[in-house]
Image (cartoon, rainbow, N blue to C red; front, side, top):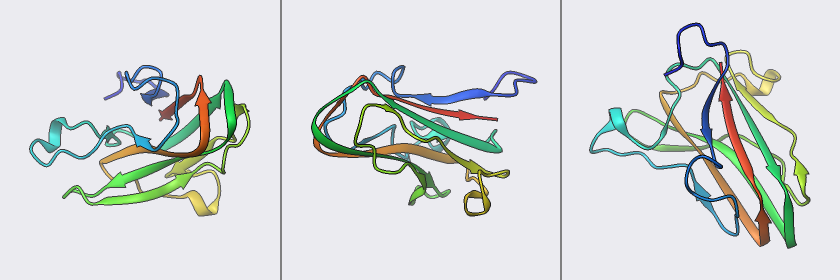
Amino acid sequence: MPATNQSVFQLWSLASSGLGTTISGNGNSGAWSAANPSAESAIDFRWTDDIALFVFVTSITTTPTLKVQIDAFDDLGNLFPALAATANIVAAGAAAPVYIGRHGGGTTSFVVLPAWGRVSWTCSGGICNGVEIALWAR
């Protein structure tokens, strides 16, 4: 939960997650925990109106394709993949940010966010080094 009157806050970051910043396969920020839905490893969207997904890659090996997306869980833990996703990332640098939520980034990205979600990624054909994936909200 954000601090009182905090207008922007970070929901999740790959760099601070303990998962590392080298991506060579598929992964995600965490799954739904049916055993304890109030303290699960999924990302808490309950206090957000809008979400921005930022991805930066320092370097790549061979020719990978990296795609990062925002997924959602319903109240029973059913996965709803790709509420929003980056374009395929094939070179080092910053990817175009992705925005979703009540205000959206355009008419196709207006989304009523559920209580829980996650960040997931697919990477094939190579290795992406120095990856930072950050999910910000307000």
